[in-house]
Image (cartoon, rainbow, N blue to C red; front, side):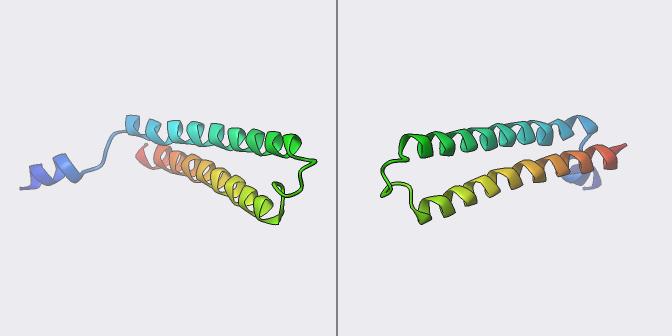
Length: 86
């Protein structure tokens, strides 16, 4: 029973920390794409004030914060994984 528990629920090796590294890279690119998309939308629809309103800015701010937070959390988890394994 102990071998079963260790095999399926035991600690993983240091190589699995790369998972958080790749997630942080993906989340950073999502952050950059979000910023670029919002800026392009504002530039294209600057004259049409019905499309660029307060709810758009609140939604945009929440998207930026969410993607930046996802990047930070995955970067922090990668650091914790690297420092705790060895």
